[in-house]
Length: 288
Image 1: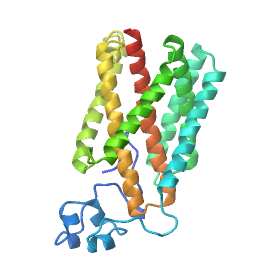
Image 2: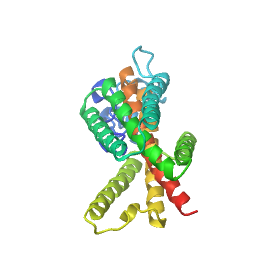
Image 3: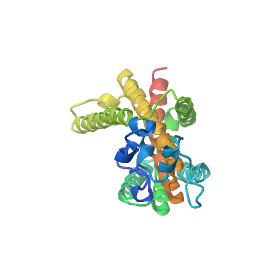
Image 4: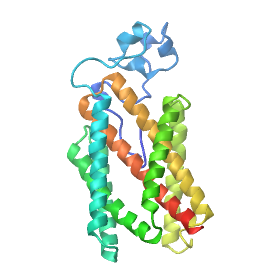
């Protein structure tokens, strides 16, 4: 199973390079006499991990140069998120609130989505596509953040703090072992996420054709708040998949350039959480 997030199309690390996610089946040769293989541990089907499995020890990242490290992931993530931040700041500063800026924001969101989908279908990460996505996504976020701030002063700042809090809490829960990212966990979570997106798509159509008023399920009332909280919880779920993918990629010795995929996935997830948090802050501010 590939780690995924809101676009539901991001693949896992390259299978050709010895890693393809955390749902690989144990090889027959390891199924007998090996506790890791018997428990369905994905390390049993990974060439980098087989030697460790034979010795009864958890896999260790190979010392071979050119393999992904946590420093690589942090550096690429900082570059990608930094590009989003720069795009957002420039859009906020240079584009006054108007129908034109809203149109630019919508166009930027479409371009960002197209670039994200292109990268999702690529067999290898393309830094230019990922950074391009980040730049256009930043423009979109900058414009909508300015619009929200004009009506609910301080909402973007609160949304940033909320996003950081959700990320930190999810990382803490993940590292503490309170959540185990298994194939079953991923299947259940992805089923819920797909159902959520389908319901939101139907809701959008109902609103567009005038069947549902005031945004339907995405209204600025109690129902909209509940939907927003569910969306943020789904974002936290995607973060756990991202953390697992990064952890396993390093343990399996994924190639260094795959750190761009980790950065891409984290950026997609954090953008999802920020947008939902921005809406939630606005809903609670409207009800004060």
